[in-house]
Image 1: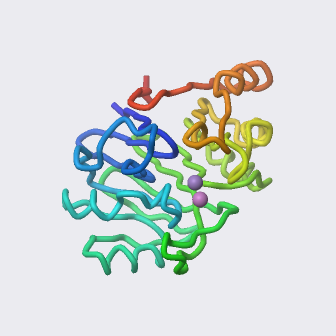
Image 2: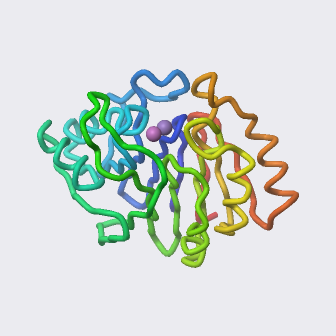
Length: 227
Ligand code: NI
Ligand code: MN
């Protein structure tokens, strides 16, 4: 069973067999978070970039539960400096893990740490587990190479729709047309005023204009990927 749970903003937990993988655990300070960082147990913590609303509680969660932070080399150095176990990677690279495979994809965005130090390039992730592929786009604008990501056969695409800092709904719809995932789940909206978006409008457009299904998850809600 692969269970995907949304915790608000860009934070998702993938539970696959006995393994818990959390992506972009921005819980402390996130007004929409449905869970406290101290209640999260994760074996792997994937971080798309160093911005505070993605790095979030990664170090705390990893060190509290003996988890490993999976991220680019620059963020890995930072997390190791704070006592976390890490698995450094970089864009285009993939690696095997006990639950499957992780590959880093490009993302067009910035990636400084909250103290403005350099966080390397931002990324997205393709997580392959039990023959299912989940693509977390991270923070990004639309890019045509999403078509290449789609060629891998994506089951679930997690795409930002909030605009201002990332693609908005219009471009996210174009992304769906490039990626052609079986299911799309919107993220990175409504956490703050400048990224306000109605996910149900987005869902209606995805289901009218593409072959993909759109699942809107409220914070705390789950979707079973291999149903
Ligand atoms: Ni960002
Ligand atoms: Mn962000």
